[in-house]
Amino acid sequence: MADRYEDARGVIQDILGPVDAVTRISTRQGCVRGNHIHHQTVQWTFVLSGKLLIKTQAPGGPPQIHIYLPGEMACEQPGIAHAWRALEDTEVLVFTRGPRSGENYASDTERLAVRLL
Image (cartoon, rainbow, N blue to C red; front, side, top):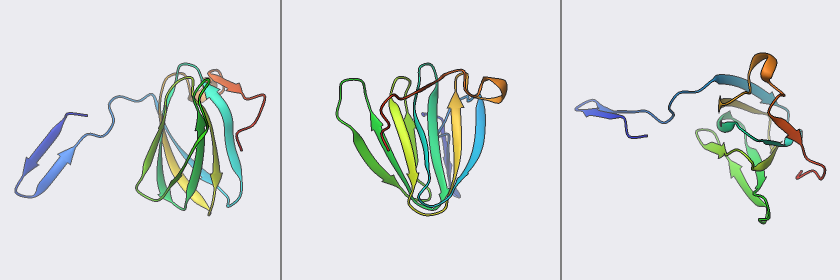
């Protein structure tokens, strides 16, 4: 994001624009979440504590694996298959733009026929 303010005290910079929902998720070590695709929703996952392995796969592309530590953020764009495995007990904040909160939580979710994790 381009919104940035700097003065003698330091910097304030926006890292996300408008979002529709912010969700806190706890995942126990070894547990898996996801194994799905969102067709309309962008999802940012910010790791608060723990260690999170995220595996993604674009249509027709090879799988990608990345490990996220506290303070790091992943972004899953619409149409990208994704799954998480907590390598430690992990707490995240998930920011979404699209139909992904409240009663719409599962409305933009397609479960994968073949799991990533």
